[in-house]
Image 1 (cartoon, helix red, strand yellow):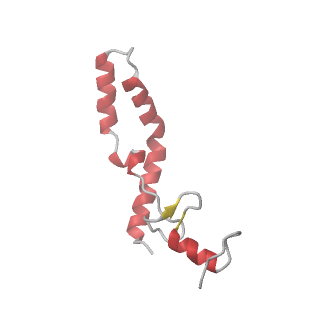
Image 2 (cartoon, rainbow, N blue to C red):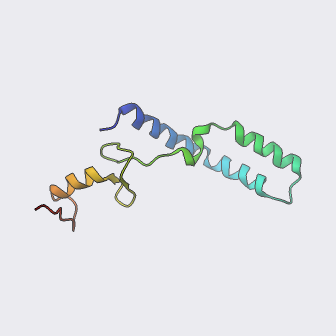
Image 3 (spheres, helix red, strand yellow):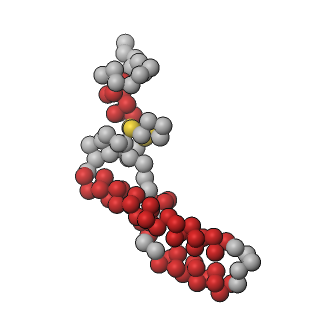
Length: 101
């Protein structure tokens, strides 16, 4: 089980990303538009830099929904390999058979 503080930090980042997504997209559109004057593009890049760092989607990290584990994460299932193994052993994942010998 991951530390509660790390799970909470990741949830906070997720909220910030959702909150600033539209603003970031608008500023990036201005910055990448070659037809706009250089001054406007520069002002937009300064505004983008003023936004909170944790509002950037690249700072998000995938975590297991059950345990909060950050490594060995299956995107399709949103769980870690260890949680998947436990669920498979208990027969809670349809079509999954855990091998044992």
